[in-house]
Image (tube, rainbow, N blue to C red; front, side, top):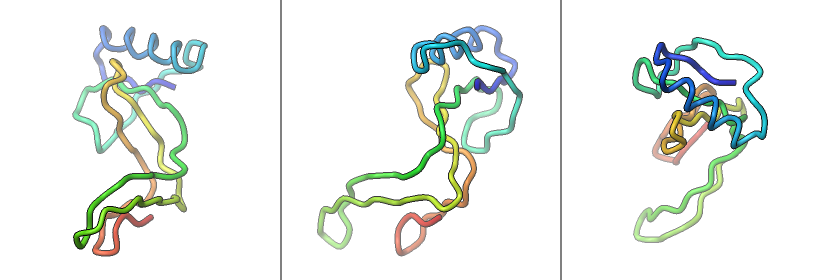
Length: 100
């Protein structure tokens, strides 16, 4: 699925990215509000985000962190495939780390 934000030139790029990533054209295109993305950006839905893995230094120690999501957000990419966005779910950053 590609999300459309009234930028026809980027829509072609988004469809091409979808084709390269999934090996097929998008099933449909829809207009949707994505809070994490700048307005009028064309995005490609890559799938459901199940977990997030990252490395961070906290309290002077470097460690790998893995977070599994209860309500699974969607992973999106810009039409050029250079920026990723997380949309949906109930993710928050707290003193404990990433929760949701």
